Amino acid sequence: MASKQGGGQQIDLTQLPTPQLQEIKSQLDRELEHLTTSFQSLRTAQSKFRDCLKSIAQGVSRGSEDKRLLVPLTSSLYVPGHLSSTTHVLVDVGTGFFVEKDAASAEDFYNRKVKDLGDSLKDLEQVINGKAQNVRVVEEVIRVKVLSQPAQGEGAVQEGAKKG
Image (tube, rainbow, N blue to C red; front, side, top):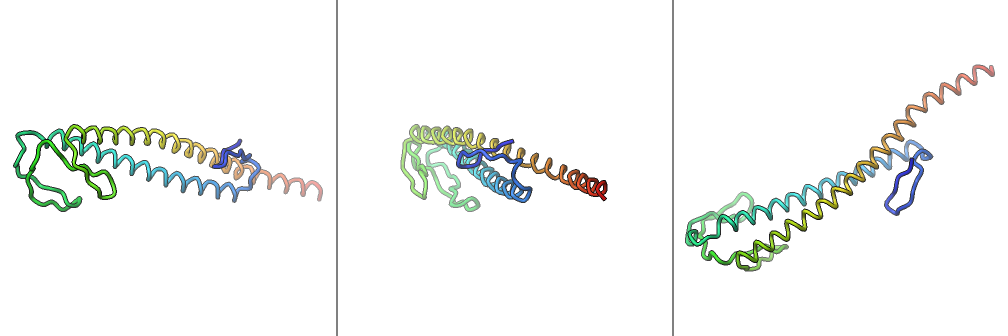
């Protein structure tokens, strides 16, 4: 059994001692946890961009001009306001910067963001599946080694008894 490490080297896992295998497994578990957290963060960002698309589609129309609404300042703080333009919106382009765009350009921007994040999610999912497979391989090698150790120990005891 062999597993690829980060540098592209192949290591015969069956030749490694159990403590080293357990260290490799814990490292893979940490990497897998980090990747999974990143996956969730990307999915959350994608969901927020989809919400922005819904807001543009539902909230920006000729009939909603000067309509009273609640403006979010934070995730839990809203202030009353009104929509001053039905043709232009402010788009958060990251790091606290906002750009004024017409509604069609804003929709295009958010659609591209959703697509880009979808592509990143697919790539990350493949990496996560590969890491999970590596964890399963290392766990199996550890299990085989642990199960074979008592049998080897009994064999040595029996050999010693025959000689005595």
